[in-house]
Length: 144
Image 1 (spheres, helix red, strand yellow):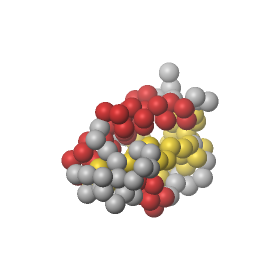
Image 2: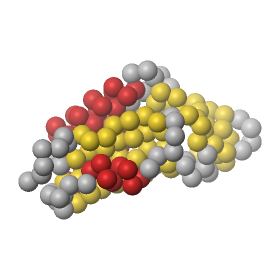
Image 3: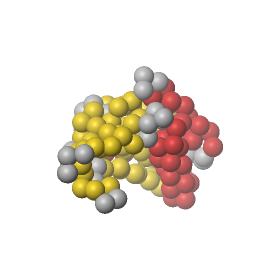
Image 4: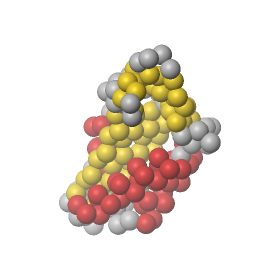
């Protein structure tokens, strides 16, 4: 099937812009028949408010939790490779905030694992979003 490469190949939190090509390269595998990629970007609105930008903050345990989530998805799904990278710090409209990818022998397995990875990451990794709105107000999202 695959080489002896680990299934979880890239997990990180970064203050620098995210590189989709790096994430795709991390999950590249000659046995993969399907690679699914999700890129979450900063949009210009949230509900009825215009968004001018945001800032992500991470708890000191966030990277370890992201690793745990990625390892758990690898155990639950028939995948060859997984990668997950999340941005922290100040982001502007259009910036990539998170990039996750899954490679599997078949596309369905890649889709399912990638979907689980982004959902589990969003639900359990302690990363908080501070949105700045165009009207000058702001809001914290995902705080305990």
